[in-house]
View (cartoon, rainbow, N blue to C red):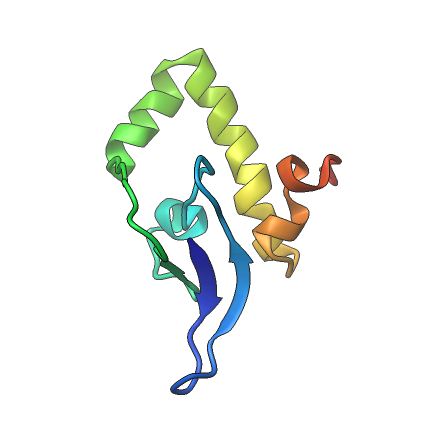
Amino acid sequence: MRFFIPGDEENDVTFSFSFAGDFVSAYDSFLTRQPSIYHVEALTDTVLYRISHGDLQDIYQNTAAGNIIGRHAGRIFILPFFAGRSPCSASPLKSGTSNY
């Protein structure tokens, strides 16, 4: 998967790649329910799973694991955008340390 900000014609700005087995999401867009400034593109055949916003909120509210995962995902994917960083560069899963 390629994460990129579309540009003029062939001037896209690619800022991240994901590989087989990685969790991929435009999570900021999903949570805010607003269009993302970036696109996610499958570069190879890909199996996608989806969940509705309402169903995910039910999981967060009604399961202990969902609540923990939801808060952790917010720290990884949402807070970096407010701080002006790419979610990939700020992710404790990628860097091994947490800034939060």
